[in-house]
Every structure is written in C-alpha cells, then in structure tokens.
Length: 162
Image (cartoon, rainbow, N blue to C red):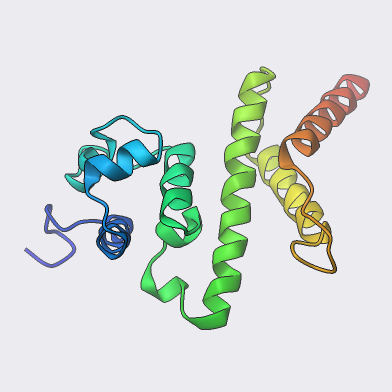
C-alpha cells in the first residue's frame, strides 16, 4: 500500500486539530465540551468516524482553538507565510459564504442551479471584499442579510422573466 492508500492515515485537518489540541492542552472531551459539541464529537473526528464535519462544527472548533476554519482545514502548502494568510482569509470568507448561501436557500425553499449558486457566491464575495475587512475602520458587512436580498432579487427577476 502506498502512503495515499493507507486507510488509517489521518486527514490533514485532523493532524492540524491534534497539533492545536496538544499545544493548548485539550483532550478530545474537553475540546468538544468547550466548543459546545457532543462530548464524543472530537473523538469521533480523530478516530475517523466523522470524516467531513459540518461547517458550523468546524467553526466552533476553530473559534475555541483560536484559529479560523480555513486554516484548521488547510494543508501545509496552502498556509505558507503572508500569502498563506491571505489565502486562508479568502478561503474562510468563501467557505462562510457558501455555507450560509446553502443554508439560506434551503430555509427559503429555493433550489439554485450550479450557475446561480456560483454567480451568487462570486457576487457576495466581491461585496464582502469591498466591505473593507479591517480596512480604515470599516467592518465587513453581515453575510446573511445580503444573501436574503440576493435570493429575493433573483426570485423576482425569474418571476418577471416568465
């Protein structure tokens, strides 16, 4: 078996999780509880029973560990130096936009085509970047209201087009 085929080799994000836990003195149960998760959640992730956690779970873990979901879930190639930090912030923002867009579309009973989803994600990303993350005292605008506005606009546009 090659290194890639080894079934017991932990994913990179699990390695990141274990490293951060060790650095901060957490055990699986204490981290789970501090992050507001089920007492066995982190253990299940480490042992491979939960290979792809939901975004809100990763967000809770990252916040508890003092990092971002993007950096927690990243590989060493994507987080090198200042360029890695910018990449991490971009991935973090895109991950949040995608997760929130999926949630909000489901709440509103909207089914988006891949093209609509991509266009809305790109629009939201540009809006959030223009909102000035950390620039000159500006704060980044909230994502959820913008998603609602965009979904409502697209809904109205589609009704008029029929």
